Image 1 (cartoon, rainbow, N blue to C red):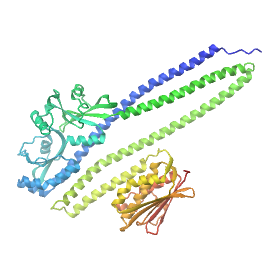
Image 2 (cartoon, one colour):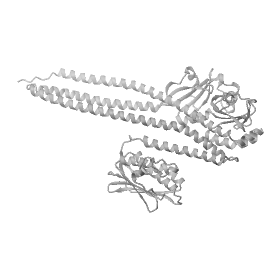
Image 3 (cartoon, one colour):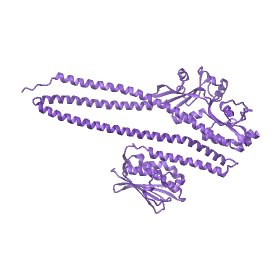
Image 4 (tube, one colour):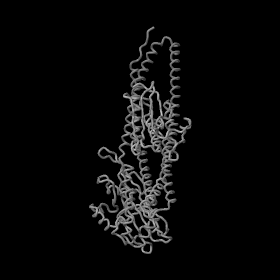
Length: 611
């Protein structure tokens, strides 16, 4: 039988079609990735704008609560009230100066006013400028406090500056004697917000709300040029950058929106800069200007570009391999057809087997894909729980901070004042401060326990390195408690397979427990020894202290999530639970024993790996 050769022209057309399809797919993927990149940039920069607004609001809220807490302590100072009633400004200034300097350094307060009652409506004394007094006060916060006879606070624009203010009626023996006002200038506010959010900020106000002559005088006092005529309607009154090109008022004022908005994303010196605005309202609810911000979002562009490049390389590589195999299998199929043309049944049987194999492979691939989807969904849910837990901890910490500041301010005032508070009242304030510390520690430990990064990849880790890293975190505690520390390690690395962050967490908690035990022991000579090494293919961590030792209970109870020998001193019991969790995770074991020094010894073993 004469065998027919395949048609070379037909074969070339098929190969060309395969290559063309691959190229079309590649172009389609490239277009899709570019569209996806633009969408992701818009989404991520939008999130940055939302975070900035939230950061701004949170910081304003915290500063307001700090002002209110401090002013609440001041109006209770009877000696201060008695001096105020004498009308002796110098004596009042000398008495209050130390407290003003303290609050200014600690809480960034820039203004402190003693104001007369509404009948006079004048300033009796400015602690920040004692030479200026007797002027009429018409600020909205002051007038609202007069009207309500209650504490009133908010953002307020003066004739030359913008500040957060709080005003409180001042009573002495049941009679209204005046008002106390505290304030934080926007420049201090902006500088701290800049550090927290890593963005340049500018405050742009409509000139109709400002005083022209006073603005010229203020700029002259600061040695700055008069920028009043830079723009017809708006004035840049504060900024966090000295770079004139970064905040161009003439460009910004062309398109000032009525609500928060990203104005543009520009590129300068290789960096991508996001320009945006937030509307600014004063305490009366009146819009007086905008907060302009400029943030470097180069990391967002760099990450998305890197991701797109990697995906393009992977897809190009995949399509190249797919095209090669398609051409190869096409030629192979042509050869098979030529070889088995004389025996059709055998060819069909062979092809049937191939189809079955392909079907099984596809079925396995689909099952693997379904499993991957389920794992991804589970990871997403766990991540959502972590975000929710972090959010709850954040919201709880806000009011706790205000409570802590209030209690500590009152304690400080008592310690530095000749008129002492009642001992019972002072003890209650201390209990409040200690209670806040206790709650904060519980929140921190619970957050560490439930939100520790479980997705860290296990790898070969040197225990000696983990000990040195953990020591950096507790070195200041060791020093403050007068504890000697010694690390006895082998000359060779002690390797285990785990995540470094989890191993460091184990060691930090062991050291923290030892420090707490030693601080309660009352001993003069306090020490902690750590021994690391190998013992019969086991990597060993041994922590020895001469503290108060361990209670006479079982290991299970000792490792319980909320058992603690130091609860009366603020312990939460989560430290040993975290240790137990990760020791089990990496197939290790832990045991404890009392030592000859009267303290405790913890021994942890992990399966060792060859170096």
